[in-house]
Length: 574
Ligand code: PEP
Ligand code: MG
Image (cartoon, rainbow, N blue to C red; front, top):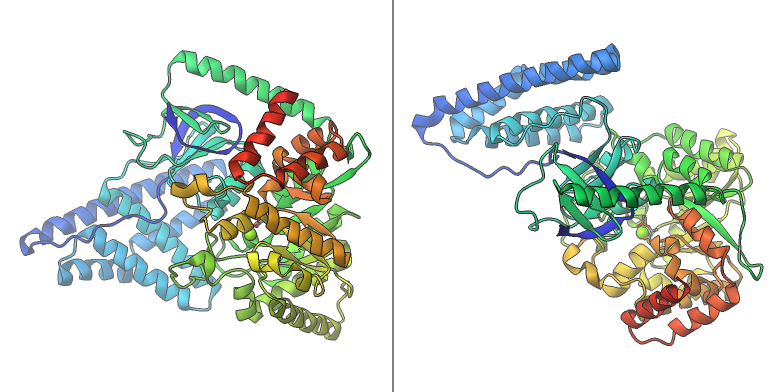
């Protein structure tokens, strides 16, 4: 058994499928003059093998999906025959005496950067193709293990160093039993997405495996305990098969609660909404009884594409969700990129501290063109449902005012174009930066609602990078400092009479219910997977009793004391 971090709950048993790294690690290697012809030979062999591989995939896709979908691979073949691309590689080998893999990597970087700079969607797509083909060639030159997708369409456990959010957006949850990542912790975006899709995930195995997992290995993983078994004996498999069966039954029982209101024994109605980042997740949230959307992470609409989505493309998605949510509200958060969320076509400057740098509302206020396009799309959708706008990572009154200024410009444009929107659209902010919590009284005067983003709030209050597994044990949502920050924000909202909700991962944590009862926060937005579990808990408690427990948490001096107190209570209740 190998101990890692349990990042998304559940047990999975199945065969591993190892994803290749998107960014290949290439060591700079120089040649002797005498080796040049050998190097050209290696390059030639790599190209031939890559071509065979692409032809095979193309034929397979043609049979299984269709001719049109397979044409992308014709384009990939053409790149391997492209005289400009190939002469760039050969030139680097010949003139700079660099090894073939170094030359390929440099040529890819050169063309990708060049195409990315062009303001042309088609060329940007070509840049992605070059990267893809180049990586395939690199794989052969470096001798990294062969990767072919499982042919029998059997579900598998995905293994990777780390998944990029864009890879995750395109996962078919029906084919993925579980996921294993070498890096990342409980609060990485992979973890959030995995929880949203109900896929068990264990992380943090870098340096812990004595042999890298291979495609085809039998894996058992336990996302609750964070443990992983590679090719275990039949006893372990048998034991976990029983656990998996029990989990399935519990899921089926919880599903029966989907249409009930989350009302405690003493009559307090908690309003439970879903956090979504795609239409797929919206459907899941609805299936699990969500009363609207408390956080629409729109950045995922911007990922895995060649250029920024247009106003029209965004509007279509926002409108669809708004219409389907009916009278329930849909809180659409404006673009929150930077930190660990990157867009391939919008390279952000390399920063020493990206989480403290150019991200979220800071980018929107800098790139007003992009921001206005998004606000316009959201405004147009507001004519079709109960849409609210939310700004991420606000840290000052000025930021709200500047953002609202652009919002008003977008409104004026729509007036000129004669398009409908809700003039009174509520505008709220995320409370996820300590400055926002500390000055919540001032910010509350400038907006219509607060939503507490505990994921970032914890990282910023405790100065603990949410992505760094070395200090994952210090990422403590129940730290007294975090509790106090939340209290300040909630009290400010109550005093000014604006609604306040919680949309960070803590909202989906049963242990935190006493805190919400004590603070008087009855709006919670969470991963679709957490909704029924939280509702089940709320249906079986009294809010007054929970509030008493929450109050006691506020007298504790350490995170450990609070966690143990809440855990002992859960144990008592069985
Ligand atoms: C948060 O920070 O708590 C949050 C909800 O936003 P995200 O996880 O997308 O940063
Ligand atoms: Mg955040």
